[in-house]
Image (cartoon, rainbow, N blue to C red; front, side, top):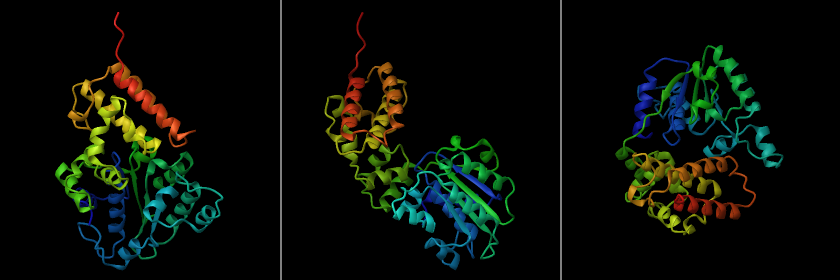
Length: 332
């Protein structure tokens, strides 16, 4: 069963017409779940206003990832994570270690999907192409999709889901009906997290660490984040203790430091912090030092997936963080 805020949006979208939807919004709000639910309802043999029946042969085929009228366009890394099968050639190349799974939507996959779009529906309810995350298309794959969006075959529908709509070609955005993902209430998100196995005492802290995004909060839980430890590390770091970050990957450290920097800048501007409770933040730092630190972290994030030496990078990140948090303007 989909989360209640996803179910409400699915019902809303199914009541409207359109051959191409662009689902967009920040990460962790359920773009993939909503896109897949929309595709499943379109293909279902016995659809309802609330979505697919979940019982028919079409729903079963989708459940086992073998639906002949559904083309899934994703980076290979995402397909493997979500349990979608790769093409025989792609799987063979990866198994033979000729290359690693792609983090982009490959041109070969797009060509296969466009060929799929031209074929006749196998079950007579049309065909669906699901693209997620749509921002992972490079310019070549995006232009190839654009041509099909401009002149779509009669029985194919598209659902594109993205966490970065601004990175898509304007021409692709203009040829889709847009839908902005809605935010769940805190009560809805916490109840859903508890249904996923998160303790009631931990759910609020994890949700705060994720900036209110429930799927991101669940990923943090699955990665082993302790909500109480999350609340403690900013003040410890400002005092020179970076041990809480020692077991984190460089990418997670940079993301967490960006959240801390964001909240400190927000508080300085009179806004509420998003990722930490105000009481868990260290004393206000100099805004110029924070702004410089923010730019530094943004630059680091672009290369953090390929650190020369993860240990040295972590040590450097902690040193720079302490410097920014404790920097004092020189008196004249």
